[in-house]
Image (cartoon, rainbow over the protein chains, first blue to last red):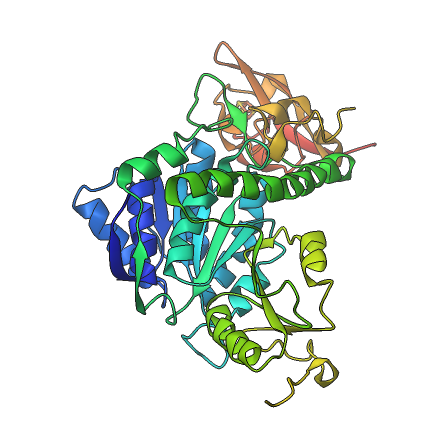
Length: 339
Length: 94
Ligand code: SF4
Ligand code: SF4
């Protein structure tokens, strides 16, 4: 088994990337994800990984370089936050449309304006429908575990889609907590070797990426993407099962906390779920049946499974980290009875 | 016609497939080659943005009208012989 260490969330991600040892990383620094690439760059400089690190002039270029490297046949990773992800937006669709399994860490941070370097989820939510798989993480341990699993999910033959692992800026990225690492060998064996599909560097079999596809075929390719997204759900569970064998930690599509007999259910993503679990305990101590559901796989969203898990609750509250103006009406808010 | 089950994912196709599409139908003006004025400098071949000048054994051949867009660059650059252009642009359909 691996070591137990006290690290920041960013350190955990950088460590996972070192163990994954991707062929190419193209990145541009942005708070709060900067530390991920800063640490990873030192691994590159010190010869701890074989990665080609491409330092670019913007996040748009970072994702463009990731796309090129992935199409060339490499295993490719990057990390970003907030405006960085927003600047990548155009290229996110290119990566998913070309079915390139790029894996990216998104250290969640609010989108400007006003400028705020701390973590709401407006960046990740804005990229919900870009055709990327999204795994969300409560803490450093989950972010580390999710990132390693994301490689397998994204590269799976039934999926072949890019994947994004989200964790909260500062609250997780910069806080130190103890977590357990897998050994380098275990990670290496778990992710296996990358098998490129139609790589541009296979010069004996030249291919074209990004051709013009008009309405006669466009929807056929979108349908393929849709099917791949649908497949992702099963693959996520299958990879989680294998991951449990090597790590002892189990993952599903979402986590349920004291939800079985809950009359009041709260649905909440990422680090806030940790705090909410304490609140659930407090209310439970007072005899109020409160439970929590924390989505892990957010894209594709497991609608049916979530609906089933929440079917027993009389009241459901979904907590959004970040206010999307005018989407949530006052009529939707609810109060717990004061104990 | 192939459907989503058979098509290669990500719309990845064989290289050089643009060659098999007729994209010359967008043309409003058509270049015409006047061979007796041609000095075989191959400027037209160098400047054509659509690789629509065919060359065989170092000699200029006919236009590839399946890919020529009628931009007129070749006619503009063509030095011709004794002040007479070897390429002239003519309106399509006339
Ligand atoms: S008109 Fe334009 S596209 Fe056509 S042959 Fe001349 S340069 Fe090429
Ligand atoms: S540019 Fe004019 S003269 Fe030169 S090869 Fe072309 S047609 Fe002939």
